[in-house]
Length: 199
Image (cartoon, rainbow, N blue to C red; front, top):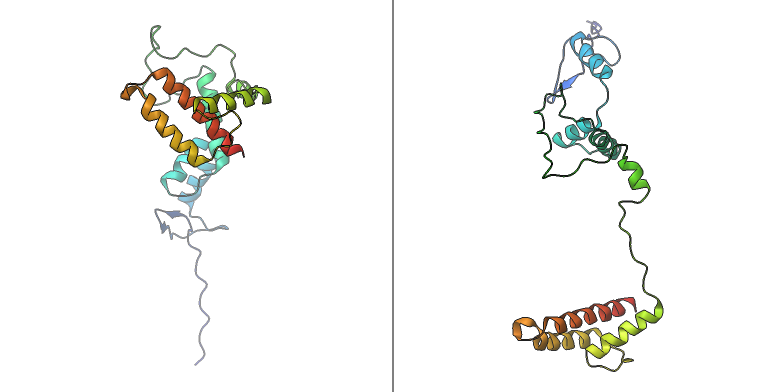
């Protein structure tokens, strides 16, 4: 006896929540039931919140999108420095106490843009230019004299370590030495260590 062809199954909702599929009769491609279609439509109409996306990714163990982190930080900074408070009316958060004049950080000047300040390098750490070659040579010679060596002596790391320990035992303030002399020894050690690393 020949088999009857199987009836095609009605599509089921593919919406997944808490690791379980809905399974209700659905339509469309992908198949979504009417209640979940309404949820997805409402979510699509909501403005995108990058901070919420980052929090949701961290909470659910998913990789965090770097673009969302940057966009979220930009939104938070813009909110903080534009004078708008995320604790304002309708935010649902407890209001912040008014700043007192005696303590706490001062508000930024009006019209101050943190991103423009960063772009203008106001916050980038300014490094001093390396000293001229003559000053470096003089500093190295003075460091060698502090260690009791001739100015042109070529020093190895082991010699430097042994001599530093001898001078530290002799000049450390806890052992009756002078704090000023110990500071000179430390500075000389820094100069000679940097020289060894640059070879």
